[in-house]
Length: 320
Ligand code: SF4
Image 1 (cartoon, rainbow, N blue to C red):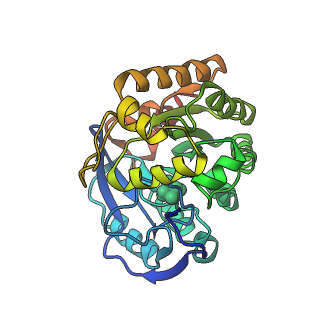
Image 2: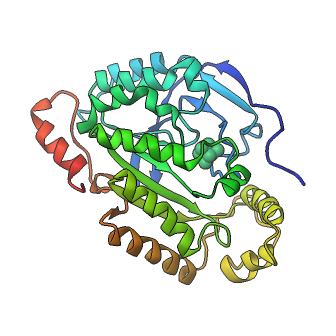
């Protein structure tokens, strides 16, 4: 069986970057993102960040050693007085184990705070607890999102072997919630035939409820050629009967081989049914569904005008 990562722990190398804050567009939302690392120790089989330019994504981590200094320079010379919250991070996990050694994410966060930039963190990590004090002191202008796909420990070890167990993650989330930091859980990607059953999703939502999570969102796996190859390994490892055929003929409706740049969504009926179930379960537990309005709003006064902090707080917290 071909696994997507080697048996050894990932190696870590330092590299320099020319710029670190980049813009992105997703579904019409135009934002900024920063990735202090390249490659990811968490080794999720379904990862979207495994682009061709990084074939060693799971086995070699690059720590962008000058990231905080480059960021300082970029923010110091920032021209626009209006800025949207920055996504930390879009193509790696900013709180993967290498962060314990290099502190790049912590230093970048300190820089965002220094220049009064709002931000949100996407992670699967418990290491973020180290920076609880840092995010807490900025809680009116940041929020945190954990991506959690399963509370089944056996399954987690197989599909995302480098992540911490979900019960540890929820313990950390609770600490942030208790500290007054806004926390969400993104159930993404939901893997058809693997993590999409109502009971599977309900289990995650129960844990969210117990931890006091403020909002939940979710999405169905999108298939790409490299992701599909890894998914086939997972389906085989799990022994799912006719799994690959069901993916091809019933859920995604495609023929192999997948084109290199294809990005395939699950059938609309499947997606609607699964996400409606997720939304209903979340609302039954009085947890907001979907990301906050913040994502859909345009820019707001930020850097030099702190008299707008009341507005800022409203924008960030109006979904609580
Ligand atoms: S934590 Fe995120 S970036 Fe890292 S392997 Fe998993 S999905 Fe990819």
